[in-house]
Image 1 (cartoon, rainbow, N blue to C red):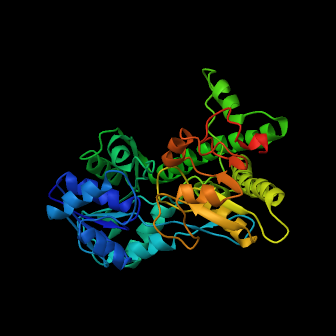
Image 2: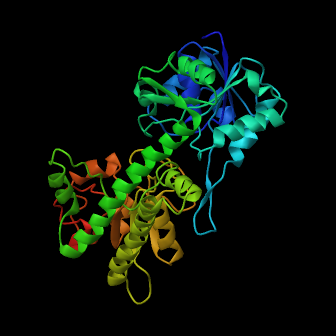
Image 3: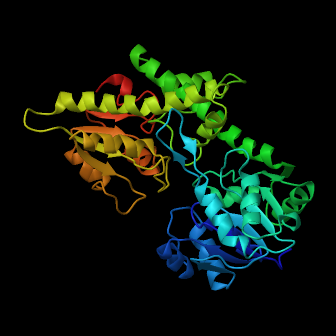
Amino acid sequence: MQDKKICVIGLGYIGLPTAALLASHGYDVVGVDLNAHAVETINAGRIHIVEPDLDAFVRSAVSAGRLKAYTTPQAGDVYIICVPTPFTEGGAVPKPNIDYVLAATRSIAGLVKAGDLVILESTSPVGTTEEVARALADGGADVSRVHVAYCPERVLPGKIMTELLDNDRVVGGLTPAATEVVGNFYRTFVRGNVLQTEARTAEMCKLTENSFRDVNIAFANELSVICEKEGIDVWELIRLANRHPRVNILQPGAGVGGHCIAVDPWFIVARDPENARLIRTAREVNNDKTAWVVERIKAAADARGGPRRKARVACLGLAFKPDIDDLRESPALSVAQQLHAGGYDVLAVEPNVEAHELPLYKLEEALAMADVVAVLVKHRQFVDARATGVFQRSGVLDFCGALGSGSSTNPRSGT
């Protein structure tokens, strides 16, 4: 199967690692992205996102001539769609937006030929793979002779290159033949199991996985608010509770972010709001946690501000999770932006981002200038700095457990 040419549409956090990994397994890969800067960067053998080991994969693939990026679709034998699927705000329930998926599909419809594979990897609401097939047909493709399937990614940012290889994959085709052919394609480069089903089940499986995690985190976030009132260290509580053989509570934080857990549950709720009651409540709890964090910081800042100025607040971390540069749906970024909009002097510290509309500071600079320090993301730089004693000062609020269980600087202390 390595004689087939692969066209990956979308060269972001999933598309580029997938393209580079396929190239490393002997495939000739063309990547497509509307971002001309990203295309230029990739063709120079560099990367435009932060992900461990990805730079080496891309550099090797480009130098070997197996990976080339373009701004327009190129003909291939296997087409993999890895574009964003955001949601549209405004109503009672955010609605999934598959416009990018359909636009990507229409852009390749004229290139797709009999026997080709068209694979959707973007997280999508149930029924989207069928919409892809309709868009292909509307664009002139004979979908009766094309293998259309859904295969969602299941990777953790920061470990993508490892997990693309080792994690099990779920493949769901629109026909049994599509499921089999696409499943065999993934078996050429995936070390994990390739599990076969039909398209709607595969779509729902991805949404279910992230909704489960959202509900679990909502439980932890709700506990953190309760524990703050009770004077209990929530991280110590969870550590002890998790010693039960059938309990596995996740960790609380400033909310939930990223383009998966913070988004996917809404796809289920939007489709069946009457029955998705627990899933919706979890989303609301996690969104409310971000607002709670903002109010805790404001209270601490107002207690330290003077009559002529708002307090200076160091916001440690803007990314949605530790040790990455991804700001999508980030609760930490939302916290910093809300504080800035409220007139507070925000000193943002994000070691994984080079530039941002909020002024960025080095950790030492921010700590020296701040009246209040809010640790929002458990970046390794902040965890490592704990050992130096720089956080042994008043006005430190730890919302992610970076400073260690039992620390006098976690939010329950009020210091």
